[in-house]
Length: 258
Image (cartoon, rainbow, N blue to C red; front, side, top):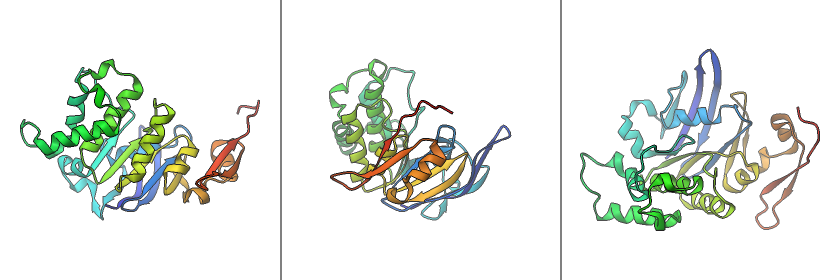
């Protein structure tokens, strides 16, 4: 399923958070958004999973205006792992993961055998099956993040929207999650702060600065010293990864902080 952000802008309280953002996410591709804090990355994602309505512009799924779909209909196609994902109620891990089936259900019917298998497989893939009977409020931030990712997988989305999915995760689980994303074969739009992880995980990268798209292309085209200097205000040397050839950034520490 193709995802297209077609000239979207978001204005809130007199501030322009996103400005005429156009971005193509081809079916099955992994596209990352990077940029400094406050550059509009999360705001753009909120328009895709319908937590925000763009002030102007359109989000399209396979050419269809996302806003023309019912909320249930869009939830059958788009799953999101957000920075605000959480629960103040102490559901068990298994219960939280099963909530991923909600857009596909009517009434309060129990999960059928196939859906139970989906939940079990998703928990195993995210290494949380051993936590199935634990309350989510007992979990660490990283464990909870993996539970919420399992819930997304159970939703069987055609588009996956991930806002800082590696937050709270140790290195092993960061690599495992992003490897899973690469192998999923579905359309993925994600925000990452770590440019080296973005380089390894993404087919294409868009760079946001002050709400505008200032660069877009493959990791090799986008992750260059001049862009890093201009957008992030740091000096970096770009070298190829010795195994994959992906561009990797080596930063120069400086005593000057502006």
